[in-house]
Length: 156
Image (cartoon, rainbow, N blue to C red):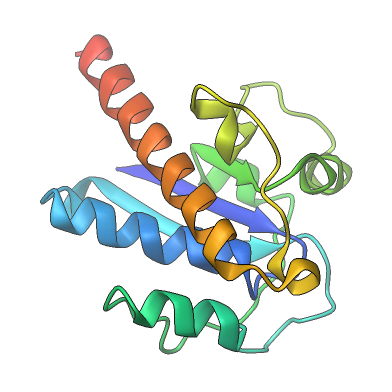
């Protein structure tokens, strides 16, 4: 099973958006049994809070529910639990490395580093632009899924 943890600052906007978009993608491709997908925060600010209404509303437009999701913080132990630890921006990567200490297996990446146009994903908490964030996350999840599927087939 391939285990992915999406990470952002508070785990209420970008990382849950990525979690639920990726779950929807793998379900539609009949690959759900191959994946375990979750999300977490680098900070403690939003722990226990539900997904931000902007993310909930945006995903609802695509028939994707975030019901039951509450913000959690990543831990150092997550390094051993997951194959991919995916941040949304360079600041997340820096905070992830502060928590993890190191990345000897190369599990830590930004989501859009898997596509042809590597960049940070803006935080809609500040921009208010959930549409742009959703487009970037869809682009990144598609690229990550393609990368995983190529890598898995090469390893067989």
